[in-house]
Amino acid sequence: MDTLSWQTDACQTEGAATFHTGQAFFRNTSQTGRDLAVLAASIYRQNHGHLRVLDAMTGCGVRPLRYVLEASADFVWANEGNWELHDCLQANLVHSLEPQQYRITHQDANAVFFDCYQRKDFYDLIDVDCFGSPMPALANSLWAIKLGGLLYLTSTDGRATSGRAPSASLQTYGAYARAHPAVHEQGLRLLMGAVMQQAAARGLGAQPVFCWYQGEVNRVMVRIVRQTSWDDSCYGFLSYCHGCGQFGTVGWKKLGRQVRCYCQAETPPVLSGPMWLGQLHDAKALIAMSELAATWQQKRQPSHQDSQPGWAFCHEQLAILQAEAALPPYHYPLAEIGRRGKMDIPPRDQLITMLRQQGFGATRTHLNPQAIKTDAPIRQCIQIARQVAQSSLSPE
Image (spheres, one colour):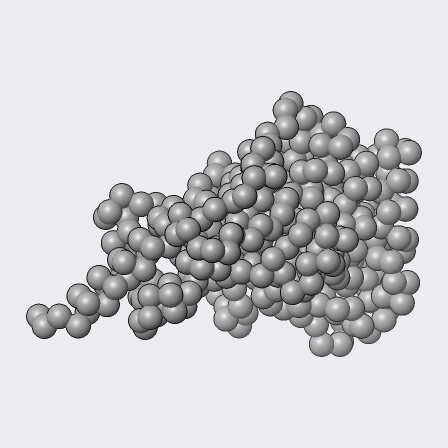
């Protein structure tokens, strides 16, 4: 595809980017994950005065376009291992960017990372958007990132992280993943835990900026810093009792002891992990991103693309991320509460309100619109859900 034909062929738009996908794999439904990355990148640019991006698996180049056009990146290295995508990628970048703003290569991502390290060419943001697990590229990406820089990882390895293939999760993440009602969150925490462990092995720390799950895709953005200490309490095991449905956390010092649930079921809870058990999001970063999303939404011109998710949707989702950040490392689907309570699925917002009235933390979660995050025990959720059901049946 040359530049001349690009002007006449049908193209797509996302944010400020206009592009062709050609033969590259492209998910329209993953726009919000890219929107959040652009917001975080823009905040970084504002705070540091510079932004150099390495997009290690760029595809058609939509991310480099958006990092430059929306986050004001000074330079982006667009690497795509598949040479057959060269014409499409080049046409997209040539159309919208100046020659000094980008570089195109077609190498294995790991070769790019080592090249950066050897030349001491470190980047403010590295984006690794791959099929399956990013683990083959994770460790080496740390050689190419600047201290204080952002690392954005994507995983579509749902079979391993959902507990359907625990041996595969052990092979890939060094963690044993079990099946339970909070597997969407488990995928994020396995990926975050892998980043933390790999960074720590190199004397680095990885601070979560935000984590995002959507449509079987897990995305984790972390800030890479010098390691100051290793907190075992944030890296451990998630327990799940099949008897009563209660989740919990288990630290390393409890390994070797029999883990029991408060319900005293004959079968002890199963453990998944190790994984990240700390907060998935940085509240301060989310506030800055939310304010920027609101500002951009006010400036947005109405168009035929308004049916797509945009900055208003990001603003809404960022509020949910803020609310769920400090709650325990699991969530309860409403269907699970209804099933265990032998009742209809309880209304989410009423259940959250009553949990809060009784002193518990509770909120909806971006992980599942029909679920809640709460620090209340599952038995309390069931009890309150029954109260909600009874109140709806009571005559006025």
